[in-house]
Image (tube, rainbow, N blue to C red):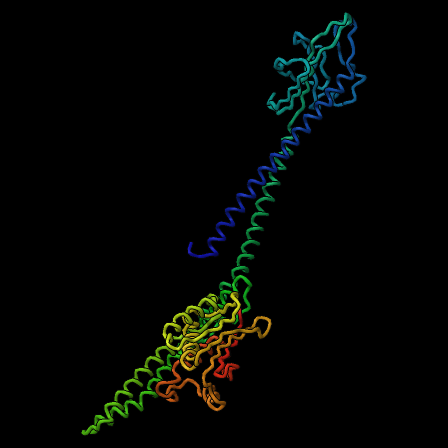
Length: 448
């Protein structure tokens, strides 16, 4: 039972079979009960017709039933299966229909006005028996007790009932089998997308596909879309590792060449130890940057949105302690509701580097603001009142890329990390001239 199809098939069969059986039993009982009620009503109506034909006997001390006033012809036909008997208070038969061919047992004692309906087996035949007790006045107006009993052959009823049961259960079995087949086909059709997911996973494992390409139902679409995001992220991550290793190897060539030159040179000047330390520091900086670049997480579409304002406040609070001697005034002009779908660590890395530069190169004022750029777009602005950058320097920052052999010692590492991260999240990064006189950094993203 490790198969979903097997589980659904078994459960569906059990539930459907139980439901159909219970339905058939309830239907059969309802039909049989209604048929018996109809038989009882029919016999009751016959007794009323017998009472309408009641007449006094010749002495007037008792009653009888006039054959001329009977409308039911079967009572006058022998062997018709419909019989009627009238008893007096001593349980003696004072009238019987001409249809009677055999004897019938006496009935139980009844109170006047009571009805008694029974299904009995008499003379090797099933019978419906309906008895009614009544009182009728004699010539002296004294009430005399009488019982009218009607016996009807129930063989045809039971034959029809058995035919009904046979028909009902035959159609039940056929209907159940048909429904099981339909349910199985529906289940196979419903589970087909899951089968396709498995086939596409195998194709991805065999390197025949890069992701899920099928048109899946809306219940599976979020799964396949997120799996595609994860696959793309994993592919990008592998590429980032390869690029990082290539960059690391390429970037370490120059410092290693310098160190190799020192190892070949037997004489050292006073300046060479400083150069050696600088090269070692640069190598350490390169390695730190490449580790940060290689482990950067992309795929912002599936991470939880971050509260932009609260995180910026934490960074500003920390930087004000670091640069307490500059007494930097910060204008935080952001709506509290602004959110960004981004990993919290990545966001802190980006905003921390940008604000650190603003505190470091600004004189005494930093401004953080935002504005709406579209239906769901927003732009985050970080400005300072420092010296800023000229246009050629801004173009150098934008055009430089992220290869470490182009990153100068002691500068650009933070911005290079920022550029890598925002690129992974499809965030537009640009620089400009601030109204405060310094540098303005723009981050354009889709707000949540």
